[in-house]
Amino acid sequence: MARFEQAEERIFTKQICMRCNARNPQRAENCRKCGYGRLRPKARESRSA
Image 1 (cartoon, rainbow, N blue to C red):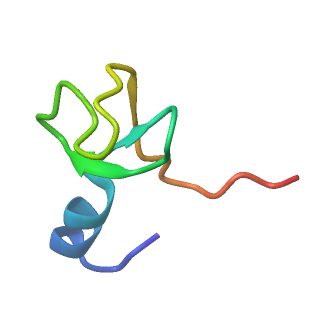
Image 2: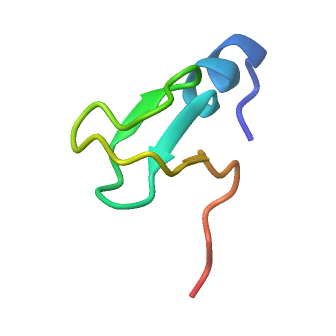
């Protein structure tokens, strides 16, 4: 993970749209790009296949 807490907080305090994968602010209710209502928190670790 990042060494700097401020940078880590700025990077990971996002919501990701489940439909179009757009990044949204933490407080978002709907996607800014497509309007979809299901958002998930940004993953802190990358998924391995």
